[in-house]
Amino acid sequence: MLKRNLSTSPVNPFDAIEHLSTPRKLATVGFFTARTALGVVLIIAILYLVPDDVEVFLIVPYLLFALAAVVFVLFFAKQLREVTKSHFPFIRAIEALILTGMLFLVIFAGIYVMLSGSDEQAFSQPLDHFTALYYSMVVFSTVGFGEIAPTDTTSRAISMIQMILNLVFLGVAIKVLFGAANRSRQIAEALAAKPKPGAKKIAGRGPNGSRTVARSTRRTRPTGSRRSRPLARSR
Image (cartoon, rainbow, N blue to C red; front, side, top):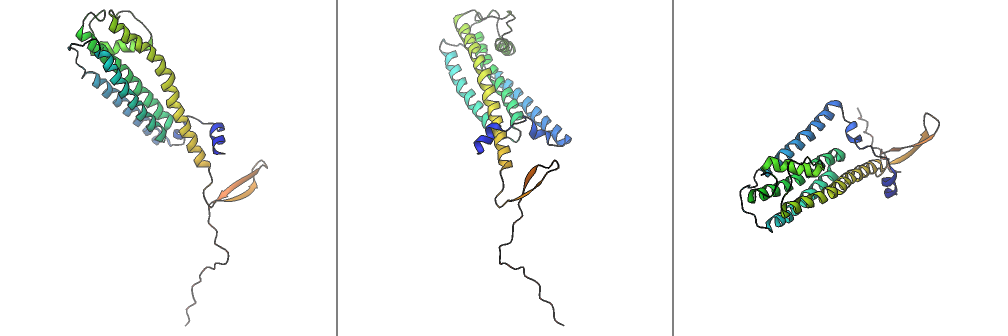
């Protein structure tokens, strides 16, 4: 019965926040916006810790990519758990999507920085941290301005891997995060509609004459029990 209700009950993505008062609504949106902005800044700051003047062997970029993939999966799993536990799952899903997307871009930007630092001919122009992040965003958005292009086999291979994973990220991450938010909200609604233990049905008629059933949670006194009365004080 619960499973059927979960699959058929309509869900408004932002109904949890719509029930708040205007000050609390603004405070909630401001909190999530500030936390998202702070997370983006911290992720970008990590990029600037990547050295840009080291010698990179041919196998190193692929090893770094494998390590970054493990970090990304762990970070994504953490964000997914936070979405399912949040009181505002859809807003939390938007935040998780932005943070995981930024981490995705920074991972490839860090690899591009190391490739360009070890070989200035890896791209059509040398890449610093900001330019590498810019190139990673260009590849992600498939804009292709053309001012930066990979020129050797390794840089082209990493760029091709990002192109393929762009489609995977857009298709899987969005579906998984917002699917988790949808299920979390439906479960919360189902639990809220579930009658409490000891509730009593009270039938009646609604304003339009339809039959309605209300539930009363007032506990009844067991049959045979008598309420104690205070003894009258004799004078």
